[in-house]
Length: 309
View 1 (cartoon, rainbow, N blue to C red):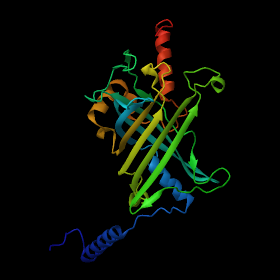
View 2 (cartoon, rainbow, N blue to C red):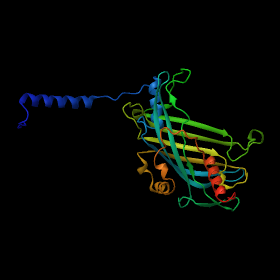
View 3 (cartoon, helix red, strand yellow):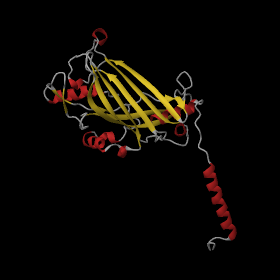
View 4 (cartoon, rainbow, N blue to C red):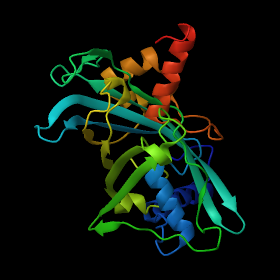
């Protein structure tokens, strides 16, 4: 092998040995494994389950499934197919007393679809009242964590990781019982009822080797299921009829917005273009719920129509 004329023999040998040593070091380097007994690592694990360790990096969730009715004395009905996405990012924190922390910001949509054609519905005929109503999709912006989560609570209690690990899979479960003032009801809900009452259940699994890899900022393999048990949707105009909604979906993370299904992206780009990116990581706006969004849309219409819908 002819040596390059710009190197002397000693320089060439040193360069080769240096390169070999570098390759050997890289090949044998081991990623730092996060320690589930260390609260500062636990918070990193929880951040990876929520978003990315890289501040501001978008993380996209996608899900699809079905929405059923449940009315006493009649068979459950498949009312809609549903498909949605959540676009989020995180801000990183460091506190001298509480350790590492993070806060997520996000916005999300969910579309109601015809169960036969899977087309996004614009109107819907209520099978109980025979009334044709306008379908109002879910477009919640923002859906943010109220405040940062830290490795230690304000009283110094260290954060613990609660999940089920089976082999290389980590299973998480979470239920959110919802019972709060209904934005469409009055000021005396504690006396006459009408509070909003629902339950959400979010389950997921990821892979332990990905989750505990301290050098991997973002999980690519993430499977989730989301279920919701709630009152009738306000735009259905059920007028107080007895019954409820049951949502059942499955999904996961996708690599980026571009990897979402085309039908979902088409609707977002046409009607909800701001949802292509997360909110600013310092976003401090109050959160929006689907019922709050419905109220705001109705109030805007009434204001533009002189007080009429």
